[in-house]
Image 1 (cartoon, rainbow, N blue to C red):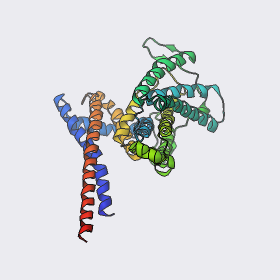
Image 2: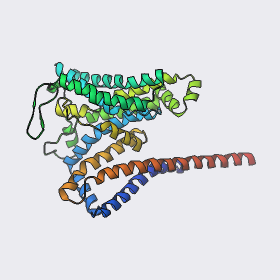
Image 3: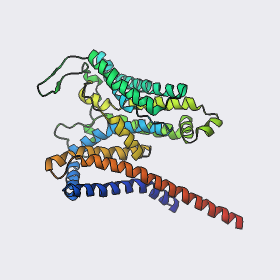
Image 4: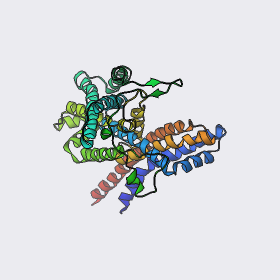
Length: 376
């Protein structure tokens, strides 16, 4: 490994490492101010997170976060801010659950149908924002925010009522069977406990590692291939960097905007599939805020499939392992939200500092080479 490669790796790791260290130090200060021992709190979290069953929970949480992060990253690579992932995946989930419950097919075709419907609905709904941008110049931030509200408070609220399949609400307010019709077992993605148990021990406490993890891996691989190994990916990145230069090179920038939004929505449609596989239906308490969390994960991972994976695992660990803080009383669980915010803020600043350093170093090296050639 030559010095140039070592330097590139060092610069790539510098920003996220600095962000995590800064967030840890800052969070420790908040813990001390709140009267808690940071070493005890962190120790409880790491001890809790080291258990196999909790690691399954972390992977289950990281799976939709990763898919959501990739969906947001596709937009970011095009300089588009798709805030609509939240509405796109929820709308896709309820339609996919309804369609999945309406048919009975062999397992492979049943699962494939549900995934395809989810992707089509997510892509179509994101495409609305894309059409508004290319045809009327509507900023995608504004349109996707409005489309989120329309989906969550309008379409989904109406569809839940229309597709309600019975159920009751008990005295505590808990939903008992409320939601769409249950999907046949053939339509539910099976768990992959046996895969993990090949390298570990038997998973206890009824924990199940979601099979959607394999879908997330496939999404990451395809994201990398499409973005870095295809003409479409090259045009998308070129348009995101400089739309005027790309247009001069023959790239249809409006088509790329629409394509990026639709592709982002297609991936977003898969975010809720882990919850569908777990519940076997869509209910009014369907998991939320994964779309907004995915934006943070994509920013932390710098839109790189590997970086997004690390960001998703980090956020999933903090979300999952923080539950033990209330049990042990070593700290308030809210410290996790502070840590996530500080990590994201520190990462954005650190990446910008590293980027400026990299540009300055490249300019210095180019100047040195030019000076050497002039002397010769």
